[in-house]
Image (cartoon, rainbow, N blue to C red; front, side):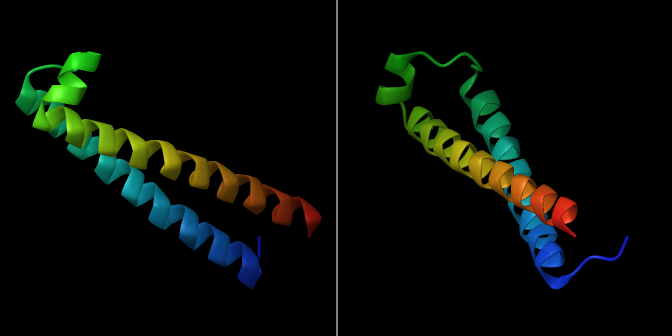
Length: 82
């Protein structure tokens, strides 16, 4: 299957955002393990420094997941179009 430039660009961006997603999940597991909990309560998230870091990582993971989904849809559309 020969890919055009738009498809190659979409796959490259999908790869980059996928790597960012993996690193964010990796850091989430490290911070949660270091804090000693994987079930965060609202109190822990708002009063603890680790909770703030986990909130930021969750936001990055969420936004990055949406971007990955959009790039997958774009790649599928371009693949079916050609």
